[in-house]
Length: 145
Image 1 (cartoon, rainbow, N blue to C red):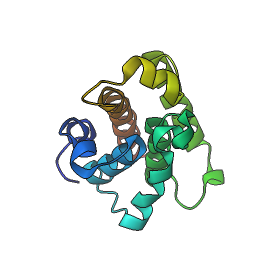
Image 2 (cartoon, one colour):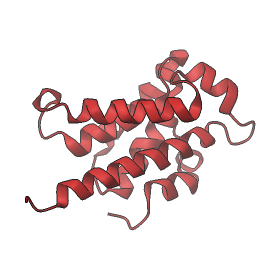
Image 3 (cartoon, helix red, strand yellow):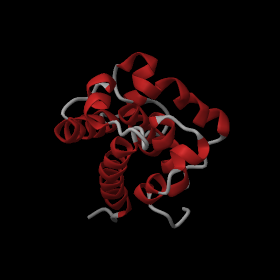
Image 4 (cartoon, one colour):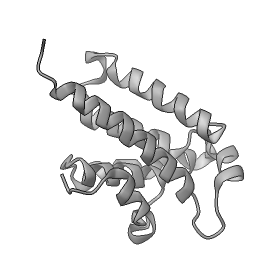
């Protein structure tokens, strides 16, 4: 781990410094914060999810978070458990409550800043994602009773 928090990495301007879209920002920041050791080829997979997959559909912070959950909590494949599905459901519900929507177009209309772009959205996503990931990691580290 880098010693920096996911939120701190996003707040420090990772998206502008590295010219990343929302999905890339979330995945790259988690890679740094949690020491995921994802290689560039894996990180590159997030590129097509920015801007709601380029068609203003599901916001890139949501798809980026789903990639983080997969990288952190899946051993081999998604069907091994419902954990990622449950984490996605929680994250999507919480983000819908904060942002008012999960699709890019209405989120941008309300949240996009003239100079900071979608940074306010990325910061909210980083805060919620960090809370969920930190909680789940603590559960994983508890010795069995």
